[in-house]
Image 1 (cartoon, rainbow, N blue to C red):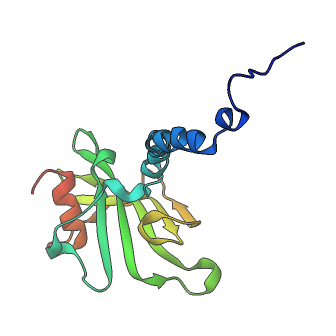
Image 2: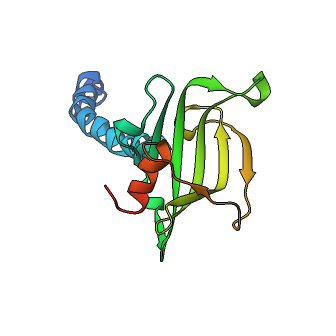
Length: 167
């Protein structure tokens, strides 16, 4: 006989629902805690990519039209040249027709701190806000492209101040 029943214990006592329930009720907080520990990193990792973007000074912004942000982690200095990424978050959707409309633009710029000028390297438009959603267009510029002078009290003046440490 592979198993035996103990005649000294009543059957209903060995299979008591209340005993099993009390064990599970005691273990329930541990299971919930374990679930929270496992699921929390999923939510923390799903934070949008715009967490590192910092808005430039208000005096260089265009309230009601757009907000410009800088990712300080992308600032690279080589002598007098500084390369950085900016993000323009438009208040209203831009572009002509539906297939090419966008809500934000990420621009890679290079600043010449000595001569107070800049040039564009890459412009990427995104369907969503803050550089999210589908990439709509991307324009690459020649790294030997034309330099544009930084105008006083302009948006590029604010970016040049950050890039060249003039804040």
